[in-house]
Image 1: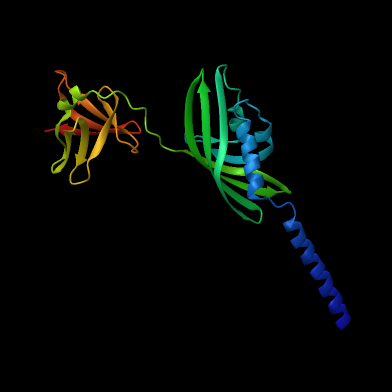
Image 2: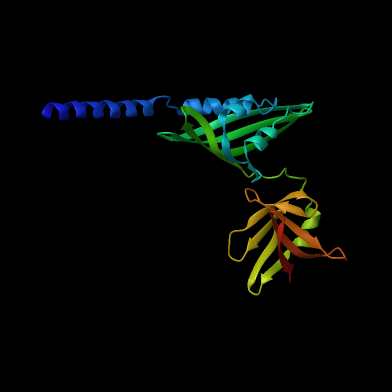
Length: 242
């Protein structure tokens, strides 16, 4: 009887070990995840669908940098070769990962360089991908891509306009911002907060370095500035000139 129990225990031990061994097979590393991701990025410019077809799971949930949700078919459908005169290159950088069991999360920057008929452009994104091992195969099951904010190109300053902008603007009773001109530069200050330099984009449109959105000076039918507008994501907050 004791021998029978011992034999049964041995069988259970072998079953357990076999299960552990099967779980440890086909692991994945950060280096392999980066290699696969770079392979997918390299396929974007020539519009090669193969790597995306291989690495995206059939039930993938993919949110692109514009906030659009893609399934596998629509994501692959976005791929096509760049037009003539366009040259693009994408580099995966600053990767970090968390890998546990059958799940791996990879977080990384996407540095994009694009040349359009000799003119160079660039953009930076950040992505977080989730990979899972199912049926012994590692595939991406979810992705979220965000775009880093970048300042617009600075236009030629026109200090002759600055005098039109100087003054106090009111959002609500007691909530004001002042626009001043100092040393040939234009500044905006809300309440007691530190002042911020307004940089020219074009005409009456300005921006603040490192701050998403635009500052627009509105003119009335007589050409006089009567308001300053904070525009973010195409929504306006209007400050009326006092």
